[in-house]
Amino acid sequence: MSSHDAVKHGSDVLSLVAFDRGREKHTGGGSPIARNDHPRWPRTARGKCQSRAGQLRGLRQHFYRQVVETQDDQPLRVLAYSLVPSPRARPDEGWGTLQAEADQLGYAIAARLHDVAVPVATTYFPASSASQGVYTPPWDRPGWREAERQLREGLADGVIVLDRHNISSDDDEYHAVIKHLGEHCRAFLHLVISEEPVAPT
Image (cartoon, rainbow, N blue to C red; front, side, top):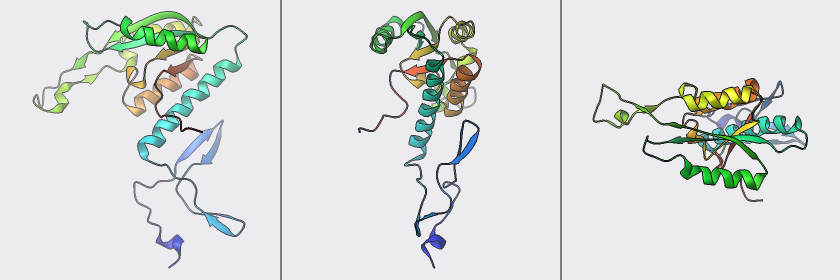
């Protein structure tokens, strides 16, 4: 049996396909690639969570580059956005961090917006962890809707938040928000704390 025949392909080892400006490219899994008579395996993801985080970071950076390419010498204008855990929490506690990040990168903060995370109570298992609630998706929050309005009207070039959980902890929902900002608002999302730490060089 050859080493190729010994490879097991299960449901957790899939060939990932990414799209790069309309072209498909192979990003992992699959069959070995022959090069100089020595087969090599395509790079596979180090871990499902890490590869997904890297993809999300890459998508954010793609839309950032698109915005930068269309800018003149003016500083990028960003909306500072935060999601506070309760009505008693002060949104300005995190704005100092957002302001410091914006200053370091040369962004100009155009407005500060926030929403309060409102848990939706479950009625099925009140004692379970599920009863802790599911938070409102960003597009159903008044502060986030206002951010999108300002972006569509060209009042800002992007949004700066502390981390992705201010937008959504759900990968698919978060991905949809990044794409919507980039494709429909021509804007980018900047995180102070990235989805995936950049490896030291």
